[in-house]
Each structure stands twice: as structure tokens, then as C-alpha cells.
Length: 434
Image (cartoon, rainbow, N blue to C red; front, side, top):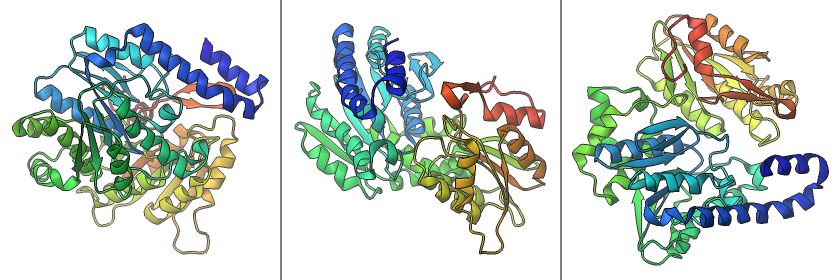
């Protein structure tokens, strides 16, 4: 109710400058109140927070898989799931770090269930809204950072600052020792090392994809799991490996967890591979989109003569408009055919968003891929699939596992990319899409 009133007030009653002044103390108050009402349960459980622009959900699931393989009872809160012990549900909120006591209740339930570890996704927006506060963190993990949510934060510097504030906040934790795990391959690793330096009784661990290249190479050669078709998952696996090491998990348990790990829905998620491949991914930033396309074109199933047919979900309305032509530019240089379509327009005109993406496709270079603007997302996916021939790859990006298309005036249209693909291909629905 409170947040509904807040959204209504923001839109209709309170001028934006005044609202910006009201919002921080509002979120701070509820973060504090939640900890007081729930009895600060994070003091009684080992809490690991993972932050970064991309890969957080997958990294958390890998950490969870390794800990469970090591016989540990875990709880997990991510953008897609809320898991306590053996009970897993879809995330109850659309925000990754929800307010209104949600995280404190999560820790409380995890402690009552006898969980030893809690794994939490930490977002920049959650930090600016104080949702990381009054949580007694044991470990902070930094994966990567590149431009995202720039308009929401005002600048990339402010976005980076929010991520760093999470690291700095660990000095307020009552835990006897704090761990900082930092991806040394990222150019901003020194910033996070400096932020960690301000905390006493700490251990700083630098990790790299090189740490797991041998073991993952062996697993790929022997079993070739889908998730290893994306080299960016080496980074996620390296973070999980680093966490496992500080917690004393055995090497053979780490290896077994990686061997049995399954691709997450909507993350390099192959619906089929023959006679042509169809893959769904959440990629919604220029770097993540580039990585998806490059990984697909290097894949074992991408042969000479294969075409990459792309359904490019338009960037969400009301945010990060700068990246729209960048997405179009990247698609133009990697895709053989492009269908630009609707994603989450919110209160913007979806056709305008689509045109802004198309503006990044050069019209003075040849040859350029055939590009169509198709407003209806299902129609765009259907056209892409019907355009595919043997050996081609259809890449559908932008939504991943999200279950709604957000439209004007708060309207939410039920949606599932995977289910739509399965219906078009007339193949049985998977467990994850049912």
C-alpha cells in the first residue's frame, strides 16, 4: 500500500524535485524498521552479496549449486528466484532487491529453516534506496561493470558509486571477518579494492576466469553443457569458485557442481538446436548483446553458411536511451537478418523506441542486414523462426525469463519468450515455461 501511494504521489501530486528529496529517507526508514521488526536475522547467517552489471543471477545459482554439493543448506534471493532450503519459488517481486521488509523476512525465514548461507543479488538501485543497509554482510562479490542505468543514476560515475557503496557498507557489519571477492579482469577492480581497504578485519580475494579455465575446459570437452557455450560464464564460474574456496568446499565437489549445472531459463537458453538453433537470452546492454552474438557465432553448431537471425527486443521505455542506437549498431555488424520489436515500452511510444534502435544501423555501408520493424513481439519471433533454414541460429534477446511486457499507465501483459517459441515450433512445453 505504501509504495502504491508513493508511486501515485510521484506521478500526480508531488513535483519531481520534492519527490527526490522525500524518497531516500522513506526507503531508509523502511530498511531500518524491517531490521528492527525481524530482529536483525542476518547476524545469524553467513550472507553473501553479489553485484555487477551482468551475470549476477547465474553466479548466484552457481554458488548455490556448489554449496549444496558440499552439503550446505542455503537460501537464495535473485531476480528470478526466492529459495529457502529445498523450497524454491519464483521471485515474488519485480525488483531484484525489493523493499518493505522483503529481504529481512527472507533472512528471518532462512534462519528459522536452518540455512547456513544466504545468497543475495545486490543492485545499484537497491543500494541507492538503502536496501543493503541494516544487513550484516559477510562477503561482497564484484563481477563486472559497464554503462547501464546511466540515466537513472545521472551518470556512469554515480552508477559505479552505488556499486562501491555496497562494498564500503560492509564495515558496518558486526561479522567478525568480512570477505571481498573481486574480479581482477575488470578494469574497475582497483576501485573495488580501494573501497574494500576501508574495512577492518577483512580478506580480499582476487579471482579470474583463468582460475577455472582448466576444469571448465575439461568439462566442456567431456560433457559440453549448454552453459559453457557462452565464455562469459567462465567469469561467473570463477566467482563461484572463489566463494567456494573461502568456505572450504572441496575441489571435487566444485567440479561435480559445475558438471551438473544447468542453463538458467532465459540465459543463453537453447529451445532447440536442430535443424536450426533457437536461443533466448536476457541481453539488454550493448556489451551483453555483443557477447551473446559473438559466442553464438563461435559456437560448435555455427557452421560455414550459417546465418544469425536476430529478434532484437527494444530497450525499455523511459531509461538508458543512449544505448538504443548502440544496440542497432551491434546487431547490424553481427546479424544477417534483424527483426526489431517491442520489449517494455512503459509510457513511451514503442515505435519511437524501435526507430531509435534502427537509427544505429548504418545506411551508407553495404551490405547491411535486412531489417524489419515488427511491433508485435510474437509476430517478430514467428517471422524470425520461419526465416531460418538448416544450420541457422535465431537469437531472441531482451526479455529472457521475464513474465510481463510493461506497457502504458502501468499495464502488464503476460509474456514468456520460451513459451511463445515452443508454441510456434509445436514442441512440448518445458517444465520452466509451464
